[in-house]
Amino acid sequence: MPSLFPSEIINYSTESHFSRTYSKTWIVYLFVLAFVTAAIISLPFISVEVSTQARGIIRSEFDNNRLQTVVSAQVMDVRITENQLVLQGDTLLVLNSDNILVQINRAQERINENNAFINDISFLLSDNFSSVRTPRYLSEGNLFRSTENEQQTRIAFLRNELAVTQRLYSQDIIAQSDYLRERNQYENAVRSRDNLREQFRNRWQAERTAFEQEIRSLQTDILRLLDEKTRYVILAPVSGSIIQFTGIRQGNFIAPGQVIAEISANDNLLVETFVSPADIGFVNVGQRVRFQLDAFNLGNGTRYGNGNFARYYCCRRPTRFSCSQFVRYSVFGTAKRLSWQFDKGNDADKSFSLDGTHIVAIAV
Image (cartoon, rainbow, N blue to C red; front, top):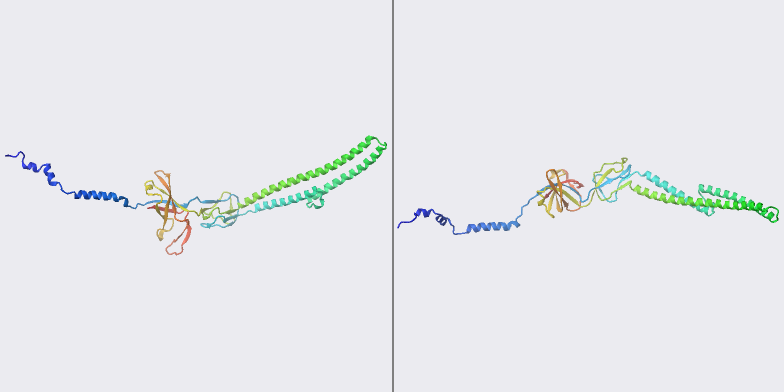
């Protein structure tokens, strides 16, 4: 019986090709699947070190303390030098304060003089004229006694006249008007003496009050001058290192508001850097970083310091083309000075402050 289709057609069909090329085993497929699965599972355990660099500067946690003067005076003593370590309360600069001392001494002399006047006035008010010591109130006491003696002499004379007139009037020898006139003159003389004494006493009491008020005012002035005198001695407000000293010497004159130096406080050091937005994702809180100082002679090798990422501030610093992320790192320890060997042949290490030093922070 003849075939409906030739055998060649069956040999070259899709089914024939599939039957010849179909594999009976899944070894390759399972191997590939196992490899991909193992790769996915191992991803959390595989780490690749990616480092990003950012330039920055070493600085204190707080801004530098600027030393300024508030008075104009001549420099008498200079006790600071560049990069010097100072403690809080140390004397840094002494200015000429002779004019303040002259004013204080003059005010104290006025106080002593006024106290002497007050004591003499107290003696005068108690009629103790022999205890008066100052020339001013010696003349006052003499004037008062001489005037009072004149009044007493006149009163004594008028008293005698009144006695004679009264006796004559009682004998009807003189008229009553004459008797009344003599008695009126006597009474006027007594009142005049009393008024004189009262005027002197009132004037002395007023002067004593004025002297007491002047003493209080002078004491206030002395306190003000003593407080002003402290401005002529510049003390270290904080402990730290002297930086940016202007080189003032003894004999120079300084003006109010003139900057003398700055003090970098002895607190924790921070490294301020600006990281680009493309690299900010590589920086995490608590991440260790390396610090490379590049402000020194690196012929002796690159020096590194350890640091610990302490704070992350998402503050942007826009520029013309991009914006940077502001990052701060804290340096291990609180020391702000390092020993550095400048030359290969120099074995002596030199110490200096790190504040303001440029640095490269490498986050790894």
